[in-house]
Amino acid sequence: MINLFLRHCQVCLYSLGKACRSPLPTLMTTAVIGIALALPLGLHVLLQNVQRLTQGWDSAAQISLFMKKTASDAQINSLADTLGKRADIKSVKVISRTEALAEFREYSGFADALDALADNPLPAVIVVYPNLASDQSAEALETLVDDLRGNDNVDLAQLDMQWIQRLFALMDIARQGVWVLATLLAMSVLLVVGNTIRLAIESQRDEIEITKLIGGTDAFIRRPFLYTGLWYGLFGGAIAITLVLLALWVIDAPVQRLALLYQSSFSLQTIDFATLLLTFVFATFLGLAGSWIAVGRHLDEIEPR
Amino acid sequence: MIEFHHVSKRYPGGQEALTDANFTLNNGEMAFLTGHSGAGKSTLLKLIALLLRPSGGQIIVNGQNLNKVSKRKIPYVRRNIGIIFQDHKLLTHRTIFDNVALPLVIAGHRHQDISRRVRAALDKVGLLDKEKKYPLMLSGGEQQRVGIARAVVGKPRLLLADEPTGNLDPELSEEIMKLFLDFNRVGVSVLIASHDLALIKRLGHRVITLDHGQITSAEKVAVSADD
Image (cartoon, rainbow over all chains, first blue to last red; front, side, top):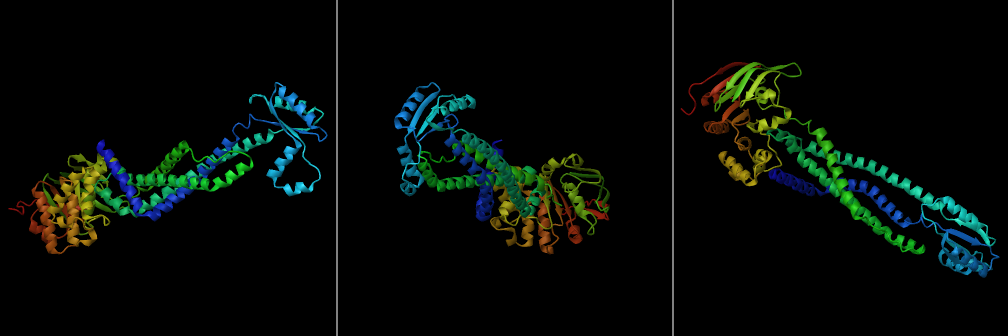
């Protein structure tokens, strides 16, 4: 038993050494695997980030009340006070016309255009955060919106909810897409490893034949090829992770800038440990499976005569 | 050691390579298998090594009926037989040491054990100083001796050789044959296919003659070479 374990270790290291002694072909094979795996992995990480960003958004539906321009500051503030006391409203936030203009000037980049205007074109806004549990239906929200719309000073009441639902639906599609992509690319990895191992078997035909002649079992002959496939998978996984980390590092600065523009403290999260581990396990498994298929198909064809 | 009972071998093309072959090689016996090319010498050896399956009849090697050996068990049968080929069948990308060590590695021996036994085998064939060389750096006779070292390193009780002296000059042939005699002397059964009749006669062991797939004589020679 220990002997068998030792022999496995031996073959494992032997095939690693062999792969390292021909670095270029090894690198090419593993790079193909790495790139194929980097695509779904990268998308997965991006989706995870988007998900983190939008977490809590569904419960934080907000209603924007755009006030009529005729409404005075006093009227607006008193309305905000009244609304703030209602049981179905958690809090309100008043954005006065001046504040709205200042914000717009700062973030929109149309400062010069605004200067050209004689009058402030922006209305005051009361942002209402409803006091509703997230499981409460959209109907309750609609009733609240209708109610608020009834106020004389309110020009427009807008429920900022629909776009979030659409976003979530889109993300669901993207998530499924990542799985489809991962499946397809996993199959291509199987084929790449399988083909590489097939070529290796072909080039060692004489050696395999001689080994069979002097009593080598199929398991003995299979072993180095299987370990080679395993190493390919493992290296491919490492390359995939490196590529995704590199990509994240490259887009980190622009994302920070964008987050700043949204006044958000959001920062890109890199690959978490579970995903990292899963990628390695999955890549190794693919390498092993690919070589297993190739070995199973081609080793039988080589029989000494 | 080897028993053939009404063994026949017909190739897929319909060509009959061996017809109703019967003979016995006793434990510790040495015999030559001779006949013109295509007489079925190689076929007979391949049947013993399970490189071919007979079309009919029974072959018993070392007490084991080869018809009852499943494909999975073939390697274990081959491990008990040392086989020597005319074209040596050495691994050209491995050192002499590694080539000779291969049967022991396959059988899963321990490292120290392997070194010791490989050196002993190389010493026996007089190539101990060549262990770090590669097969193509050696002469034909030396390569054949490496093949013999590989065949005997696992201490098999039966040695098979297919034209082991086919490409060698008479002097080297004699040397190689002497090695086989040495192994036979310590109890190993040896069956050698060869058409070098002059050499065979001189060695004075039993000769099995094949002609068109039939054993025409399996005479026993009373006097062996050492007497």
